[in-house]
Image (cartoon, rainbow, N blue to C red; front, top):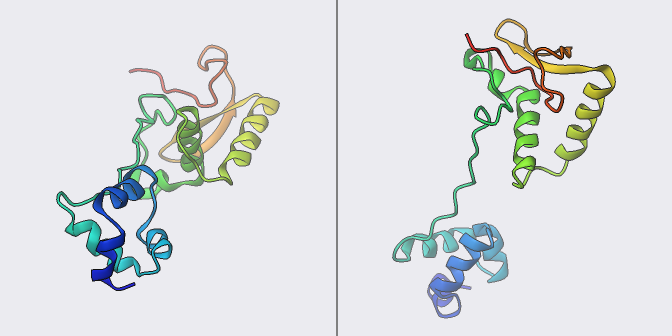
Length: 150
């Protein structure tokens, strides 16, 4: 379908609902209306006001003590697979979507930590690693060692 023909069949309200509420991508909408993704993008941006996709919901992983450490950015620790897994676990706790393959990895991690009586710790020198759980330092329901306040 041509760009000028699309405006007859796809009104701004419907486009806004598809983008904002149903979270459809330009490509998915284009397939629904037999047109191209750039055409959908054109109509999205041409709308008054422009139709923007909802920003993903953000949660503070540090405030939740999911990742209570200040990670070393120069070493790429913020992108470490363990950091990602901890973020996914926190998003799951808040009822937010996570990748499907993350759920079994989270369950495996929790089971392993429980069986071995360990928690996740972080230092700038070692990155993420596990240490034996200490009842004086670690909460019984936590899988991370929260650093003590200095």
